[in-house]
Structure formats: C-alpha cells, structure tokens
Length: 275
Image (cartoon, rainbow, N blue to C red; front, side, top):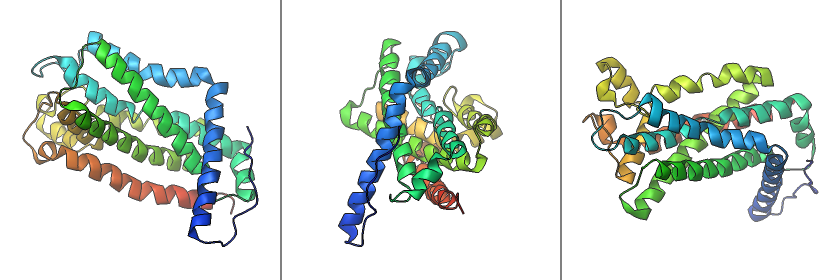
C-alpha cells in the first residue's frame, strides 16, 4: 500500500509542524495496519506463539513451581512480560524488507516529516502489543490466573508492560537497520532469547545458584515481571534484595534508559540511510 502525502509543511510555526508530523505518522501507521489485513497468518502466529508458551509451561514444563499458592499466579505475569520482548522479529523483518525494496528511500524522497515511517511502524507494533496482552490475559484467566489489587493497579501493570515493549521496539528497529537485510534478522533475534529466559519469568532467583540469581534480578525483564506481579497482587518469590524491593522503580528506569539510548540511535541511523 502506498502512502499518500501532500506538500511539505512550511515554516508556519510549531503547531503546523506538529500537525504535519501527526498526519504523516498516521499515514504510515495506516500503511502498517493495512499489512495486517493482507497478512493475517503472520498476525495470528504472533498472537498464538506466546499462548502456546504459556500453556506449555503451565501444563508440561511446570513454570512457577516452588512459589507459595497457585503457580499460574506467578507464571502468567512473567509470561506477559516475556510477550513484550517476543515478536520483535516481525517488526525487524518489516523494516529490513522495506530497506531491501527501497521503500524507505522512496518515502524519504517525498515531502513528509522525517521519521514518520519509524513512528508509524512503532505505533502499529504497540497496537498489536495491546492485542497480544488482551489475548494473553484472557488465556491466563482461562488457566486460573487472577489479579487481586483492583483496576487501577492492573492498569498500572499494563502500563509497565507496554513501556517495556516500547523500549524493546526501538532496540529492534535500530538493530534491523544495522542488519539491513531480512536474512540477518534471524541472527539478531536470537539475542532476544537469552534476555527473555535469563529472567525470573519462569522461576524465582532464590531457586538459582547465587551468582545466577543476582544476574537474573537485574535483568530489565525481571524488574518488569516482579513489578507486574506486585501490582496484580500475585506472589513474587521476593528475595529481599534491593532489585526485588525496588522492582517498580527499576521497571520504569530500565525501559527509559533503553529508550534514551536506542531511540536517538535509530533516528540517526534512519537519517543516514541514503547518505
């Protein structure tokens, strides 16, 4: 689907420039959403994969064992956090395909706000993340998970999950532009797995060797998983460490730090693509 753009914005003030930026970004977002309708299988796979992991670790592998109470109450919040890291390969693949086909170069030659392509890509990804959270929450309820601290705390937990996703998204966009080719995405996306599994998503740090538990507790995903468990009122397998006691603070600081590093890197890389 080709994006429709109009004349470049003139120097009519900040409000006019902001309006053009929003309009161009929305055009790029609609382009990405149109791809969903044309590739429903890919969207379905992205939704089903984390559900399969949740069911596998709930009924087969035994995630959350050793935690007081229902193990699903420990496992489901962790899986929600893990879902925010998985699926980035779809975004990375879309970016590299646009690069390989020269689509981004054509967009850059149009009278549109620089960076609107990246904003549109990230907005569509965040919408899909909201959908993934909704599906995972429904499946979590089906396997017996519940939250206990009310709607406000639950919304706060969802906010932390989406913040983590937004941070991971910009890591993926930057790495995709560095990789440059779709075939390189597989090599890059392998890095997501160690980050995801070297966390407290499936097991408490207390059940691990001391050195490994310490590493796990400082994983950004562990901070989000622990904070989300606290907000949902689920057992967290608290260890009494500083990272565990300040998980909500770290669940904000880690993504903000990642965004502060990778957002400007992605924007700078995008600006240099055609130079």
